[in-house]
Amino acid sequence: MRLGFIRKKSVSLGLILVAFVLIFVGGCSKDTDPIKIGINNWAGYDPFILADKLKLFNKNNVQVEIKRFASATETIQAMRGGEIQGAGFTLDEVFSLIDTGFKGKVVLIIDYSMGGDMVIGQKEIESIADLKGKTIGYEGSVVGEFLLDRALDRNSIKRSAVKLIDVQADKWLSSFAEKDVDALVCYNPAAATLLNEHEGTLLFSSADIPFEIIDVLLFSEPFYDENKTAITRILKGWFETLSYIDTNPDKAAEVISKVKNITPDNYRQGLNNLVAPDLTVNRTIFDPTSDKNIYKYSQVIVDFMLSKNLLSERIDTQDLFQAELLSKIANPLGDKQITQ
Image (cartoon, rainbow, N blue to C red; front, side, top):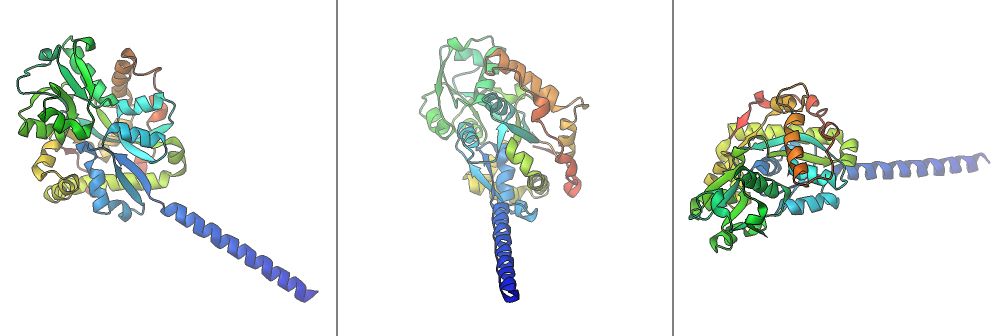
């Protein structure tokens, strides 16, 4: 009887140990699954590419896979489908996504577009007013529609006075070169190529509407709730990357331009029209008591989108913007504001 008891006890203990090992291994494999973050070709998202290549996320003990998409539309589809857990979006794109019922949290201000989003006309087009009766190509993304509507509104032109056609980002250069369009709504680095190599005319840009095109990092709400430590490490890696760009601009240009198949000069020109706020500035922006808070700036965008029926209802920005993880990060390398 005693031997039987010992055998049973040993078997039971063995089963418990096996179960523990399986649970432990399963837990480890889940923790090491890379967090997928989607970006498009916008210059403001380039630090994600650099952080990936320099393994700055790995340095902060978090596995990240940067997935590059041809357009914001594709990124949104991937986010909705659960293909990625986080992504870089403009605020208006986030609002549009939330309006469809998607649950998400904004944890970082990536950049302000201060001229990097543009309406560029053929060389004979001299102003937005010249676009009446003309063909304008745009991606069909929310930010493209937002910039275009702001440009038309500023010049008292109704949408019905122009012809709008869908041109995806990977077709911008060929569409403009072949003169399929009289103007394009686009962003860097393609915009810089159109201006420098195709004699394009800058008609309107995000510099004309400062602080209205803001890029942010969005995570799905369920993922955010369950992975705050990992997201904090991603944010730490992001700010370390900004510091690296500030102190090693030539090396950063070399790495990023090689990945994007553009020249280092094209990369640098793309940075001239954006501001990437550092950790200190991010904390200020997320502080509702600050006169530069994101809650105030975002209402301009929400109001405009509501006026154009781009939203079905007002977005609850208090719940959307989450500052708690920023407070857990120490200032990296002196934390210098990067203004490109």
